[in-house]
Image (cartoon, rainbow, N blue to C red; front, side, top):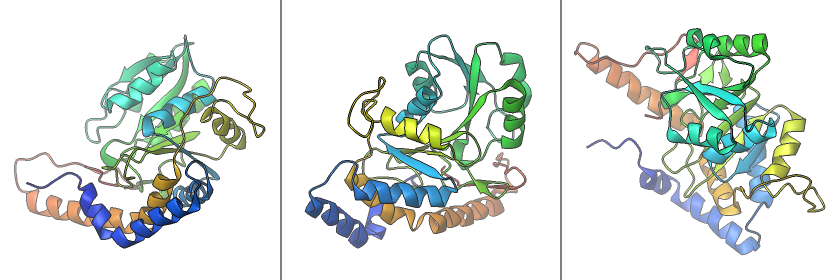
Length: 283
């Protein structure tokens, strides 16, 4: 049987470096929001192509906190695709907002922009594009709709780390990018973790407070916040694995091309790739 993911094999491929990173954290005596997290956030922002990156506890929290940073909550509506992981909708509903589900484009399994506008109401505040299986959504059309109706665009990049849309990495295309580092992801921690990317300094500063009780630099709570921090151990491990993410995604593309080559003359329906997109082949 061919596994969709093998976290143990990933670990063994970089075992010495990962163990060195773990020992470095243990020896430091600093285990939450320290230098490893700061360094990873900078390195991940550079990888994605955004000004800012913020480590959080999970991909679900990344979506939830992003919505909270946009002041989305009770009475609001957020449009997303029906074909997605439970976490996307759970994060929306956790804010008090209502998830409005839109069907897919049949060729790519991503949200169909042609079906969005009829679902927009005065309560609609944002669209969450899910780059499912590693394939980018039709971002240009989503941006057009968001501009027309003054909506925010969030990207659920949980399955698409390393994917590109017209030469730009996913997570750099909307107002906020939301990532999961669950162990089976293309960039997986050895535990839970997530990140948010953005080019907005205002949103970044608000998210820093939201992930830790609404604290300012003096640890005074300025508004309701939460406990959603990426720990030092996971950040150190992710720093090791991030160095290899580009080549890992390239390997996934090579394997996918072999599947397409040898299965093209069968009765199977093979996945298609949108023009100008670079697939991350999470699955």
